[in-house]
Length: 331
Image (cartoon, rainbow, N blue to C red):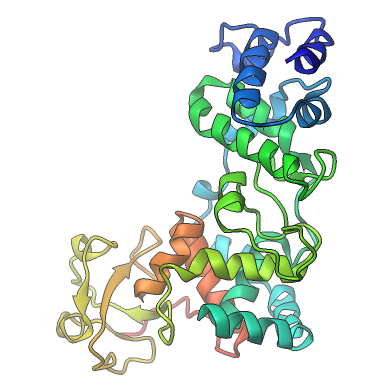
């Protein structure tokens, strides 16, 4: 406790941030309590000193948390930004360049290589952009903010545990303003539960090792993925389609969706396979429409956003050679 208190003593004033006004507890008192909790959870004094020296809340992080952009984008704008020609081309190149690694991981975990590459591409442009924010500083800020303090306090403890286990230093632990890290943008708790040492060097380095990143992605998806099945596909729905039937809460066999007028995007009948699906309408005007299966739900475990899940599935399809989505519905 001595070292952690020394770190706190370096905080010579209360950090007054307007957006943190809800928290009436001075930051240095909050940090002292957190250090005591971290020590009791097994985090070493050395790690606390390394990670928390001169730490302070960051107003920009709170502002970003209050103003997340994805919910303000319509479907086509989001798809155009995420499923880019450059990302498709680079994904195909990675499929060739990392073929041996991807084939090995795909066979062991049952996840198609193109799905893993798509997740890698969307989250960090294949490791090229992982975020430049200090993860510990961001998580300290969000844990101090009362709005989601419980969630981010747990993430902060797990981030410190990752440092304590020697996977990365606090200085090198960079990521997004929200604490998502590395080539996969895993939150610390996801790292603790699913990160793998794919290259066998004794560290789970999702920042610098593609092998670790790819195997960690596969390990995360594997528990709910159904090998041999697709995530979903674009379909057409009739003008009088009952939109109350859309959403993940309603699952029907393909034959029942066909009877309701749902067709493949080229106007042909849906498959007669014994498979249940749900209709997803990600835009306000009911177009485009998608029929999605269990593996779509697996993607949603990664990010609870229909825009994200469809983009990941579609980028995987494009990497695999399938055509773009159709913006105009067929009669």
